[in-house]
Length: 273
Image (cartoon, rainbow, N blue to C red; front, side, top):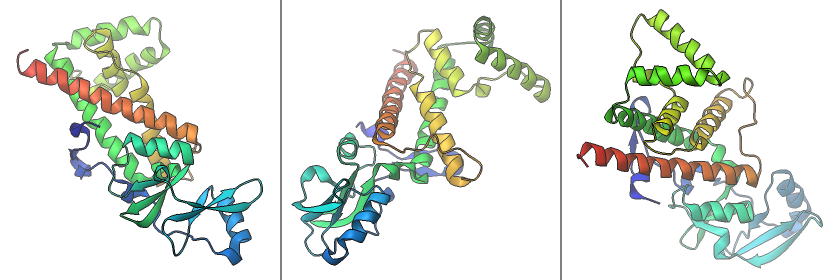
């Protein structure tokens, strides 16, 4: 993972938003295996999607639940079942372990300090960080369009052409007209949505950017809305399966890759290359 993606990000009202580490999102109040409570623990673990729990005395031992027999198997904890608490949450190694095992144990040296489940990526810390990175990308894309001298006329012409075949751009064109009437001000590149920015950069062959970034933005915003007001929003964008998680993590990596490419173009353009 490039250093640029691990640095602190400043986005105004959110202040400085660092990439979350595993310790920032994991569960720290753990349940432990007790032989006399094995049946109750099995039901509890199955109900909450927990596949293994630690031994209360030996940090090298875990008890893995067989969901069919509802019995625990004692085994030594392997490296692929643990992550260090200071590792960045979006380190690809963490994703691979979660996809393979659903939940992993968080460690500080030889001590188990928590457990990480893929659903922990639904937490607000993750949404806030990603919102910051997407906002940063939007700013960079606006800079890129300016540096490549894409004019207001170019943008409006692009919308008119797209509106002939796209319902989305028909609505976008109407919104644009309404904004001009309400604001009594000329169109500005600041009025562009992320979708607009991506499509314009692609259309003018400045860079090829996947719509995956827009899909991630929608997922992040809807998940944030649900966490803040669960009674008003759908849960469909939350991570409920390892397949959801894998798709989400790939979208995040696409965001990071896109930011690196846009950053490189900005550097080349501003330095006169």
